[in-house]
Each structure stands twice: as structure tokens, then as C-alpha cells.
Image (cartoon, rainbow, N blue to C red):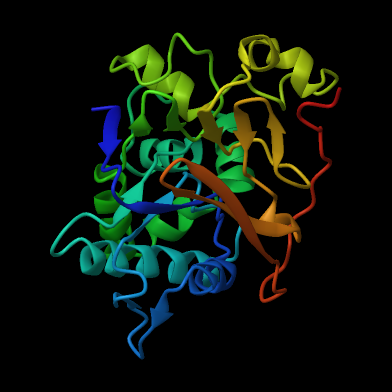
Amino acid sequence: MSLMLLPPENEYVIVGDVHGCIDELKMLLQQQGFTLNEHGLLQIDANNEHKSIVLLGDFIDKGSDEKLTETIEFIYKNYQHLNRQRKRFYLVEGNHENMVYRYITNDKTLIINEKTLRNKAKYYNTAALLEKNAHLKKLFLDLYAWSDACYQYKYDENFSVTLTHAPCEEKYLAQDNTEARKKMIKSISRSKNPKMSLDALMPYLSKEAKRHEHYHIFGHLSQANIRQYKNKICIDTSAIYGNELSCVIIKNNQLNFDAVAFQGKQEKGSQTYNKLFDF
């Protein structure tokens, strides 16, 4: 199922693309009022009982094996822990989770050749990690099964938020079919169109943007800062590239933003930013 409704009475911390930045994720959640016990579990108390967490996809890949392992274990145990009494932790499927799943399950639709093996090593390094660690692979497969392609928060008729990993045309948003799911998980390839600006590559984003409070929030497109045009908001702020891990906080009919800087506890990647909404 690709659409899930978030209970409107709760506050939501929506975190952008983590990519193994586990130290930054912990810091960001602590800034939102969560504390960690000696077992690495997020504690629920009177100050944060009303808060829930949504990871907006791509929590794996690009980071070091050590940090990717920590990330998967942290998300797994806290997903189990926070969701014991009621749902407080939600996972959006990203294109990296989708591709790694296809690699490690020997998806018959995935053609294996020199190019795909090169891409596996370069872009989807979690796959090799999981292939040599059966326990970690099981944790990831559970997390993948618990993920959805889209969540919606509806406060009232004037305010709502749709959450997907990737930007997509409105006709695909919150639709429960195979094509829509693909579009919400991954947008058109930037690497195959290196000379095109993001705004030219995805013209529907600016054309469909509206000045109202029915927001579409997504990650996927690594940026130097949060990019917003009208009701379209990208919160992938390139943590693994040495920048920041960002979140948007939804409370009633309000949006607020927060971030933590890259902590330098693993090697950062390199990225040439193609700015979104570069008008």
C-alpha cells in the first residue's frame, strides 16, 4: 500500500536523507526533545509523548560500513521500541532502499551486467555490506517491508502535507498503483541528464506549485539548503556530503525547520549541487 494517513493529533519530525549519518540523526532527534538511554533507545516522556518520527527515505548507502551498520541497527530497534503501544515511527521508501532490496534479493527484473555491477559498488554500497552480514540483511529486509511510498497528514480542509521520497507530478501523488509508487520513490535520473538543470529536468514542480498550504515535502535531490517554492519543499540538505541533516516539524497547521551540521565522524562524499528552484 502506497498511501498512509498520519493521525492529525500528533506532532511529526520529518527527517531528510540520512545516508548513514547516524550521529547527525541522533543529534537532530535530541534537538527535538528525545533522549537516548544506555541501550540507544529513544525515550518517551511527557515532553515528547505526542511526537512521532518520519524518515523520508534513503537512510542507507554512501556512508561508511560502520555507520551504515549503526544506522540500520538504530532504526530497527527504535522502530520496534517506539511502535510498541502506538505508531510513533514511520519509514518512507527511498530509491536507495528499493535498489539495494533488488540487488540482495536477486530481483529477476534487474539486469546484471558490467554497468549495474559498477553502479552497485559506486552508489549502493549497502548491498555488499548486507550480502556478507546475514543478521544485518534480515534487519534491513524487515525495515523495507515496513516502509511505504507515501504518507499524508491532513489537519483540516486548508492545511495538509504529502510526504514522499522523490518529487513527482501531482497525478501520481498518493496513488496506490505500481507506476505511481515508482514515481514517488525515484524521479527522472540526474546522472543520465548531467547538462540539464533540475528545473528544466522536472518542470512540473514549478508549474504545479501553488500558493496554498497543501504542501508536498520530499528529499532525494541533494541541495545545499532547504529549497522551497510555494507549496513544494525539498529537505535533502546533503548531510553525507558534509553539509547538514535537516528536518521539518509538523505541528497542527504549522511547519518549522531544524538541522544539525555534519559531525565529521566518517568520510564525507563529494557532490556538485544542481540547485532546485533556481529562478
